[in-house]
Length: 210
Image (cartoon, rainbow, N blue to C red; front, side, top):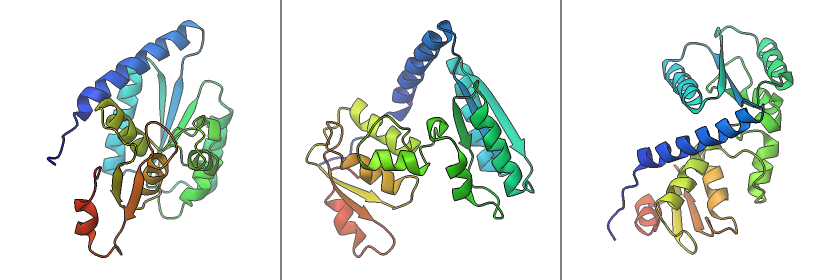
């Protein structure tokens, strides 16, 4: 069966238009959604991502603030910054850009974010909700985006053999959790491959969705 290329840019344009409409409705009711992005250090790739997120917020009509901290920022200072954002009523979402400097415990920082503002979906509360199929928490963005792309492209997932290459906490594991859920946009038989998988090609060749 030939591979099918999905036009992600077209889907992204649709999602952004829908988001802008929702933001407009909320703003009209007196609540302007606000996102705070925290960037620690001067990693070039992270800076590009942060700039893109700010631009997307601006285009959607959201309130956006970027907090740039030096790479030498002590862990406790970063945690205090997260606490301030948790308490800020004008901020509805908090994103701490990864990776963080080595002297900072990333897991501790992610756990410090209020689960209700954890737009990356990395807080243990949101991870737990995802695993048991509750959809009222935030989902990790890349896996959730992939699932939306499959839906928008009309890909039927129920009963399909889905092979995921990679088992990271950011993409691989949550992708597997989402696609195996008892839901109309899931119900896959999921195989997760990684660097210790024997004969990777045999798994990928058997995939309906790779």
